[in-house]
Image (cartoon, rainbow, N blue to C red; front, side):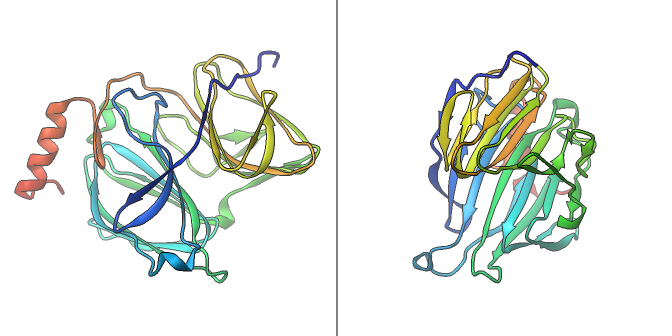
Length: 281
C-alpha cells in the first residue's frame, strides 16, 4: 500500500426537510450526474432539539430500483411495509432493504432513553438487471455486528471485511463496504480499497487527518478513484466516521423522488403503475 487515496472534495451537509417535516443533514442526493456511483444519497438525521416539537417521520411511501440502508445509533425506528413486514430498528441495528421492483413502507422514529434519535440513511443503487427484482430485507441486530479492535482503532463491520472480520450484510451487487470507524487520539489507520471503487467517509464526531487534511465533524469526504488505500490519523482528539465504499455500476440513471431507474420510460411506467394501482405486485 504505497498510493494513498486523495480527497478532491469535502462536502458540507445541507439542511433538508423530508417526509412529514423531518429535518435532515444531507451530504448528497440522487442526480443524473451519478457522481457517487453506486451510492445515491446519504442523510444524517437527529431529533434532539425540543424546539423541533413532536417527532415526525416518513409515512407510507414507495421505492423502486434502489436499496435503502438505515443505521441507528440512538433511539429507534418503527417500520412496516406493503409486504406485511414490520419491526423496530433499535440502537446499533441496521436494516438493509432492497426495494427491487417496488415496495411501500413507513419509517417512524422513536426517542431512546436519552431522549435522542440519531442515525443515518444511505441509498445504494441497483444494477439494471436487478431493478425489477423481488423486494427483500436484511435485518441486522446490533449484537450480530462484529467489532474489530486494534491499536486504538475500533470498527463495527456492517458490510465488507476488515482484517478477516466480515460484516453480516451479504449478497449486495455493489460489493459494499459499510463501516463505523472510531480512532482514539494519537492513532493511525491504513485500509486497502480496490482501485476504481468509490469511497466516501462521513465524519460525525471529533477530528481526524485524512490524506494530510484535517477534517472535523460534520463533513462528507469523497476520495479519488485511484490509489490503493485510505490513511487516517488522529492527534489530540478522537474521530468517528462512517466509511462507505463500493463498485460503481457505470450505468445511466434517471432519479425521480423515491425511484431510481435507468431510463425516463421506466420512470413513466412506474408513475403509471402507481396511478392505476399495479405498483405492488
